[in-house]
Amino acid sequence: MKKLLFVIALTALGLTEKTNAQDIEFGAKAGLNVSNFTGGDADRNSLIGFHVGFISEIPLSEKFSLQPELLYSTQGSEAQDVVKIKVDYLTIPIMAKYYVADRFSLEVGPQFSFLVNDKGEYIDSDLPDEDTDASSVDIGANVGLGYNLGSNLFVQARYNFGISTVAENPDIKNSVFQVALGYKF
Image 1 (tube, one colour):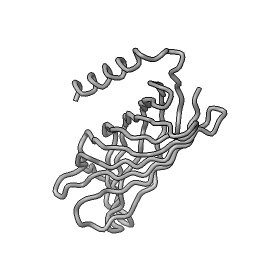
Image 2 (cartoon, one colour):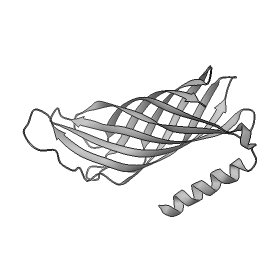
Image 3 (cartoon, one colour):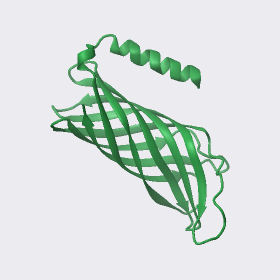
């Protein structure tokens, strides 16, 4: 995993070599998560969570840019009205952005997530919370869109679908819809 992060960092640095440092924008964003697990045959309900963190946008051409992010994201699912499974991640999405119009962009890219906290909270029960044994690394793919509102404000909507499993037997993967509001410094 360390090698993968090192290669990603080197790639990002190599791409920025062609850009002017003054063109790189930095910012912060926060928003709403609607998450669930896919896979298996259990009856599940979505959980509402949040994400918050920092972004940078690296222009590569007039219409194309790279947007790496560092976010804290709360996700999970409610299983059969019995237990809420909560998984919190430090996520690193690396979004390729294509500006279809002056302020409107389409986004796609991988996401690497590292587990910070996981627990199962029983609903209407005196049973104590317990560790879920979720996988420590989650890999996903993102698709979304963004719109620059002006005055350095932007909005984004994104869907993240899990590629790797959060838990095995059955193979459970993350599924997260995100809406965010951000500000570029």
